[in-house]
Length: 251
View (cartoon, helix red, strand yellow):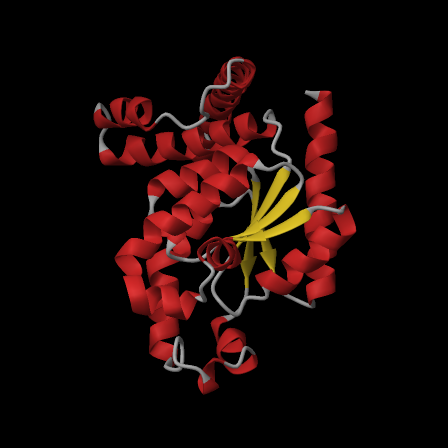
């Protein structure tokens, strides 16, 4: 008696092998494109090209292509010289403490866009908002990011406001290795002091902030690091960063 299920599975295995071969070929050409872009200082992400590729596909094939594009871009970023570390995450995730530890261990300069804005304006963030408003502050902080991203051997921390602008996230992605510090929302709320403050004094506001930004975190990050002890997190990020630069030398 013929085992029809085995026949079907054998056929799927044959198709998978062909797909794997085609996938390897695609990655090879994506790597060649990445090398060309790096040598000619061209951006990895080309939204117009991606939109053109996606618009000719139905939704199911488009989702598959998005995964392939994400993988290709991730490999192309590996070919870049990015002597900067950027930490992202919700307020209270521990990124400022971790950034300080990283800066000390790598002998990097620590740049916080809020602190840069305070230094450049001679005013506190609270006074800047009170005098000029948030609409004025956004492009001002963007200028701080542009300044930070030109520096080498730096650890950068940024606000959630900056990440709402695609131009800012593109700058970060192209020029730095980005680590997403992911921490449980309950731990952020109860351990960070927010109940005594006004920003996230309501857990609903914290959840809303996460819902509004977590997709940006996922898209922007090179690596996700689950929060534990700050020293452990800093050591893990340091090891990943060093491994990445060692791998780049072999490409």
